[in-house]
Length: 104
Image (tube, rainbow, N blue to C red; front, side, top):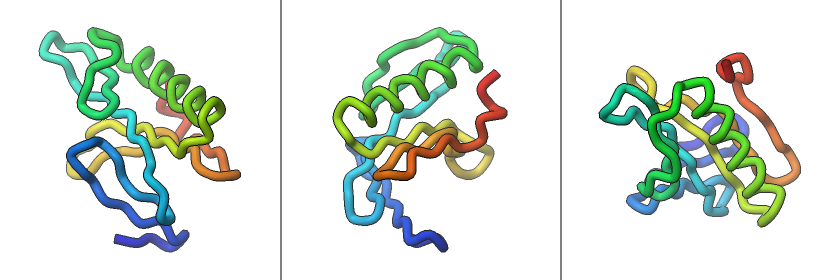
């Protein structure tokens, strides 16, 4: 699937999607069984039992750090009603935060 900017996306079991021909690491927010949120990387929970606002801020911080440290393209997303909601994307020279109003 391609969008107007030329991005192509594909979900794999490892948690990576593809962006303009390069692997993009996905950091995901997922609801935990206790009513909080957990932050996952490649289906491994890094943090759990967080309030939503704290989880969003921490996930964005992790993604931004990975992007700056390793130069790897990173996406932060959470489940939406029908599709994942992209909260931030760091890729190439266009470091971009998406929908910063969600970071409560």
